[in-house]
Length: 141
Image 1 (tube, rainbow, N blue to C red):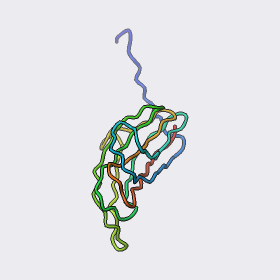
Image 2: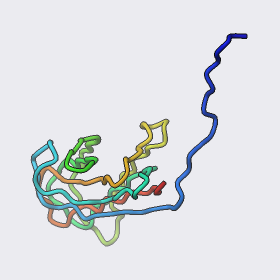
Image 3: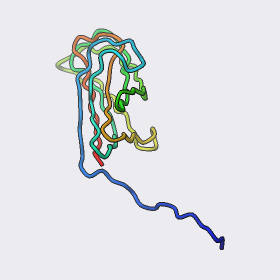
Image 4: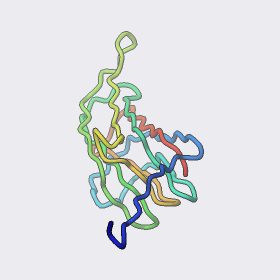
């Protein structure tokens, strides 16, 4: 046996309370550096937060295709961490809109752990008529 054996952490950290945050995104913003019109969708608490999934849905007829961009805002710094192409939507009362679910479960994508008091903000590349609802599901630490 070696004189020194590092001790591995063998405990898990779980959120203390579930949290859901959302925002309506519709104004065009072609910037990819975190400037321009951004919509807050999920604020982290004082001890940080984890986001398990993000759901995106059309809020009606959107005749322009766009790209949804998600940033982590940590104080005054913005980091682009995800983009998703969103096609047009007819906005029917007899057919469902397409939901897009993004999983951050460590398998499909890396875990999304936010620093204390940071937030997720969103924008779209082209203007939308009805907009998109971006909803984050997670919890505060």
